[in-house]
Amino acid sequence: MRRRRSGLNFGRRKKKVNMTIVKEILSWTVEILITLVIAFTFVYFIGLRTSVVGQSMSETLESGDEILVNRFIYKVSDPKPNDIIVFLPNGNEKSHYYVKRVIAVPGDTVLIQNGAVYVNGELFDEKVDVSAIEEAGLASEELKLEDDEYFVLGDNRNNSEDSRYANIGNVKKDYIIGKAWFRVSPWKKFGFI
Image 1: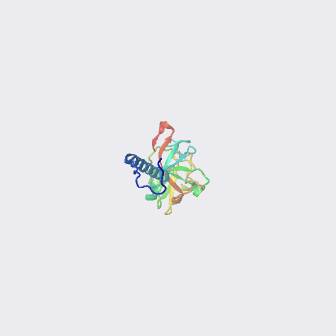
Image 2 (image 1 turned 90 degrees about the vertical axis):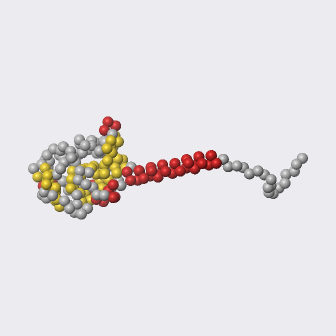
Image 3 (image 1 turned 180 degrees about the horizontal axis):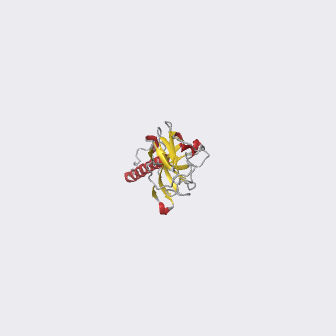
């Protein structure tokens, strides 16, 4: 009978570490971390998904279309004419997001006359087919935009609540959430806007 001694036993063998398993675990850990960083970046900067409400952007976007909003782009650049932006009217966080087309940028003048839009005295170069405007609203007289204001209109010009009306007015840059850039639903119209 062998008696077991208490205390340290220097005669034991060391267990070998299986380096293949350690490398595999490290590889998986690095891949998961990279995936999480990419996912966080996408969700934080671009990942806002919203629905179009109403027919104001019809034919370009229809009511119920699901779109992705690029929230990063306007942190490094400013909205340009013909960009489709997503904003909160008057910064009202309880309102649904509005989706409209930028017509004029800070410093521009806007006038709607005889159903047409004039920016800085010249006919606005429309990127989509739109009908003549029946109601000029606030833009029936020339409007001068301040340093942080944008004039927006819906593509369905005669069925749109936009900068022509006092309850929306000119959109301040702080109220702009981002640029509408990709339609995810319906599937038949899936793609860039």
